[in-house]
Length: 280
Ligand SMILES: [Zn+2]
Image (tube, rainbow, N blue to C red; front, side, top):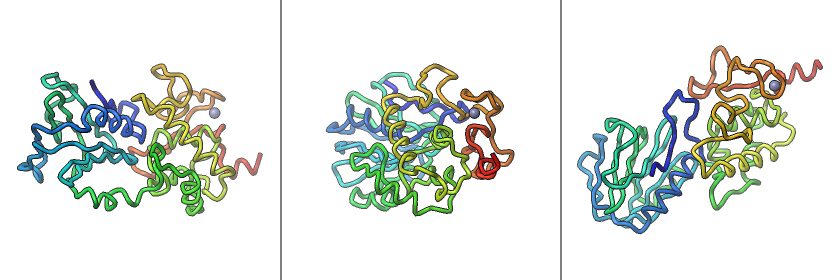
């Protein structure tokens, strides 16, 4: 079983909060209560670390962070960033990613969990998890989701562009670039609109929650309601193609302001800038 199918960078999809939630959900279902019989860290810092004998108590997701809680008071903390993933295999099953990309392998009697391309991999005391996830806003897929708190945190960033604020994990945890772009489209918002000028901020938060919930059992991030290849997104990854709603060419900036992995895609007609709105 491949529990977290976050495709490779450049394939049009990156891990979002729902991807990490699904990984945690499947890993927890298979491994909670199981004892590790072997561990293999392939990062220099933990090259000699051996977790065999530890029992897995829980695997929890928080935004794009995944925490393996072990019975000796340690947590293995990983972050997916743009391209990381965990796969779950039956022991002896062939891996679907190249071995040189594996950063850690955890084995029980029946299962092998492999973390590929994880840029963040730390062993920390479970009671100190707050130091790595405590800064995050409410988790869109967490049991303790709090829409009022997320709205208040969004509104506190009144001068920030909505497209940037949605990526800010201290506002709410779980929205990555796909959902950021799609949320702005679905709400008709120019991504550069200041938060203070977004008419229904709570509506944006509620829609983010709905989209992640709809997709949490799938490896894909469908926002159009059409789960077919090439039809899943309104604007994300569709620069130069006709907008599905109005036919205008979907755009992306000539000079991305958030780094190349964070390119914003938008439809200039469905998401008019404030100036153009005023002029029309
Ligand atoms: Zn359009």
